Length: 227
Image (cartoon, rainbow, N blue to C red; front, side):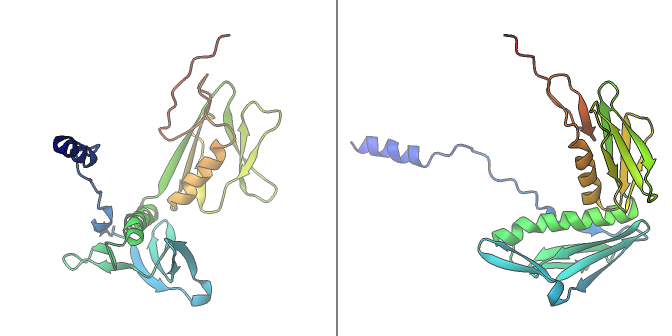
């Protein structure tokens, strides 16, 4: 009887994995300030502050990190518990931290906000890019101008109509050939978002592999069902 209880106790504490947790700790990595890029932390007036609720706690985005570079300016809103300071060892690096690293909410947003600031530094100095590939017979994109002088993308995707999309301000679209589009801009979120909007008009399908592919996107082809 005692031997059986011992075996039952050992079974209870048995774990599915023998390996420990591997955390990226990306929030602890310093940020390199590239030449020609400047940053500042500014307060946001109370009436314009945004807020969010997580784990029954309300957080206010009361400040913003303003990154200025040759290609533009990007503002990233940050909450009260997030700190951005120059590194004590090297002023050309930024150190980001949170008030309580053991708090799940602060820890989960630590790396996210750090990556957002990193994207802002890269975007204002080098820019971000998304490449769209049109796969399919007759699938192509044509760059035009509308009556207001705005850049417009006309999509030829086999529909009885031609979808036309106005290029948002701050983005640049070029077409090295009819089956390729290159979207460029300093704001990574807007670049990828506009690429996703274009992709929505013809998502890649898994049987013939036709559609609009973004960057290095691939799909696994399926076999047709034979009755």
